[in-house]
Image 1 (tube, one colour):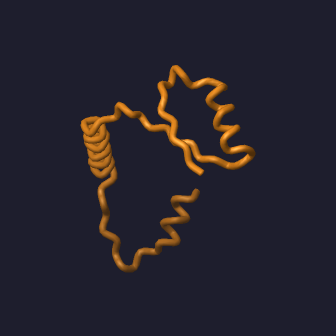
Image 2 (cartoon, helix red, strand yellow; image 1 turned 120 degrees about the horizontal axis):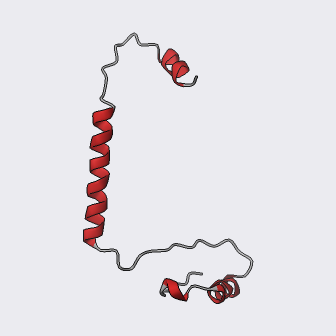
Image 3 (cartoon, one colour; image 1 turned 180 degrees about the vertical axis):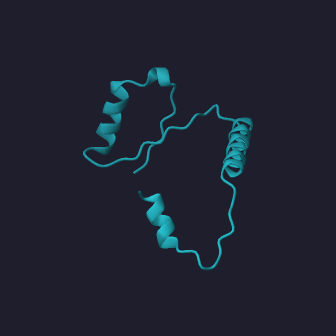
Amino acid sequence: MQHTFQLNTDNLNSKFIDSVKSLFGNKDVEITVKDLNYTAADEKETNHQAVKNYLIHRADHPSIKVVSKTDFNKIVDDINL
């Protein structure tokens, strides 16, 4: 069974929770909250920021060339001090 509720956050209260409980009884449910005012421009800005963060990370942590005789166990041991 699935129900969709659309309401303003000012209207969230214990009655809402009680209505969900009465609909589904004693079962596990999944509740997803989505901003209905979220626009494509917001998504573009979010993606843009994620790319900027990635580029900053790549600049701070450049790739290294690994030679074929590298002992990866030693590298892991060094990381897991």
